[in-house]
Length: 423
Ligand code: ATP
Ligand code: MG
Figure 1 (tube, rainbow, N blue to C red):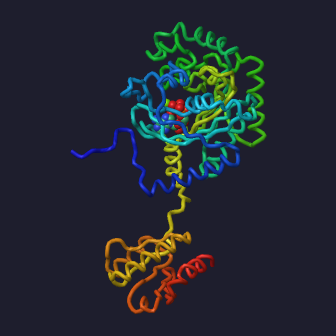
Figure 2 (cartoon, rainbow, N blue to C red; figure 1 turned 60 degrees about the horizontal axis):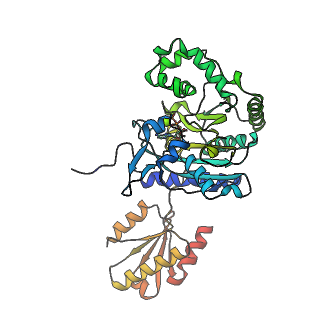
Figure 3 (tube, protein in one colour; figure 1 turned 90 degrees about the vertical axis):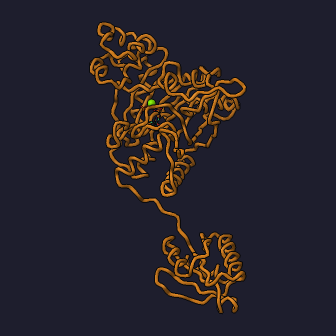
């Protein structure tokens, strides 16, 4: 039996990875413009980090973690997200001692034991940014503007940005109670998970995907009506800043994030056309996380976006402005003599050293087959090494675009190609 990749994972082949690289470059460029620096944390962490940092009542911790015991009897978990790890690293490396805020970004694979379906995988990739140490609504607006700009630069259309405030420990209990009062009489009609959430984390009932629960929650009390003055002011400032940036948004009073540490701003960017899993980016403020992990209270805000869903969106909108890899020169040989092969080999190395993308035949193919390969690679030039020309220290250089050909001394080929490329 042949071995296949594990369920819920993907192989990304070169025609895809070339696009990934360009999207990652766009993200890195944006990070440079917005002042975010990269952090790389371990792929696995102590299980305890996610239980505390993501929250014991979340789907992630309750059902989705890849947890294992290592040979030293430690419970470890493949990271299901990166915010908790970034916060741990901020504390562990005493980044609170640096000039604040600390603005970090990450990208890489995350792991969740989910039911695989379109847009939902067990190994998927996120890019995310975090601002540690600022309570200003400017920070919230800045990261939303970052995400919005990213989708704009990609050329994606039809995105919708939804925002809400989930309050803070001062005002959220009032809303929780109002929500519980509203649900109490109908509690037995809610799904089993929501009945459990009712006790443990009633706000998460708002996040339930069941249409029955959604229906029951119609006209439920809105958190906006229970916000304290500080949260109200913060929320209206974020809206003013988004207005100033010309970023359209809707207020969605039902929007709650799946993670326990969120406070104040919550937001999600979605694109209906990519199917049921339409969220392409989710984020918000998490003023409680660092102190939950044992640090000083540190107001923070961040988001994570799903790379696979960006690809699905680009595909569904027919966006394909990515460049493929170019071959500047293909070195063909007229014969398989040792001198010819060594000359071709050295020429290829010299061209590469000069920054040209260059390939030579590695299969002892006929000249005709080598020309065909040069065509397949879409090479700009073929250099033909061997025969009488080689004994004169020269080679034919053929321009594949117009089929013109010139005899060029070997030592001049590099300059010749570079100068022709500049024209
Ligand atoms: P969802 O409601 O889709 O489960 P979530 O609340 O679990 O989303 P976050 O933890 O906020 O998602 O992750 C941020 C982004 O990462 C999502 O908006 C989505 O684009 C992407 N994402 C999350 N889980 C997966 C997955 N299993 N496969 C692919 N992408 C994912
Ligand atoms: Mg999820």
